[in-house]
Length: 404
Image 1: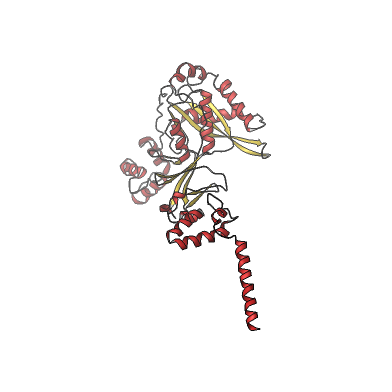
Image 2: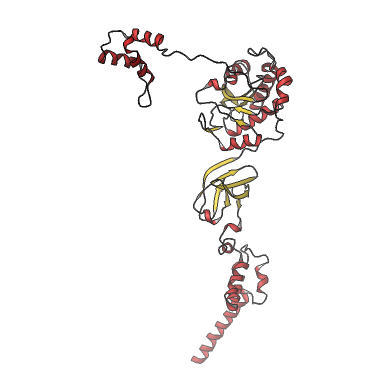
């Protein structure tokens, strides 16, 4: 067996061109191609004792971070709970936020794992602590992490807005690496067994109030098994003075639309409302950020338009987004059209002015004054029709008298 040591080690390790081989395949190749007479069990014992095959790497305990520097965040499933709004049982999740130094933690129940729920839960955690850490280590949930990566993770746009507004540094845990956030990872079963199991809640608000009491009176008041100190006392005495102040207002979580098409009418649709965009972006795709009060439109990274938020069915149109020669028609601005007609000549302008009287009356035109005001120098439409009728009757009478 020792004669094949280098060969076995290379096969098990693999390289840039070949994948590592399974030990059963290594035994097959040795027996077939190198006349090995030993059994598979002998090869397995040799690989484990001499080559450290499948030997677990030693665990190195990482020191706790300085006070106020870090909080670890994780979602955990509790079980089914009756939702009084729907009358059905729904899966209840909790957002667990644990301060790495003092081990003080906060539990926020929710039915949804959305970015809005995460931001709301984190803000409630900072209010519970009365302070905010410098950084957080979250799990790779889709509500926070858009593209997981050990070195270049990409955050969800709305969550990125949140951490920037709060001044938080985010260092996501690696995929399938629970040891990256061990201080919160093993707390989910503890929360489930100590807080949720055996309890009955009348509503989500009731569950949240219960979880906050439990976080303060049970989890925060116990003697922690690792630090051998009471988390709430250690937090108040050492950690809280080093932390940033908690936010005093909730965060307005925005909606991001990655590809909103600018239609030929110069508008995009955001939450069933129409918003105008300048002509040069027609038939292109833009990115949209919409919060409760404002809608911002981006082309790439350039901010190209800002509109007030409109309700479904509403519309916000900026006349300057239209070409100068088309704006009057789009807005039905009769005065502007009449000015263009007068530029063509006196008689053209007079004809356009007289023609607009009947067409605009009662149709909600965009003139600043009633259209009938411009008709003071002309006869009303009914008078003109009566005059034409009298003229026609006179012509018929004259023709009849000539024939007689």
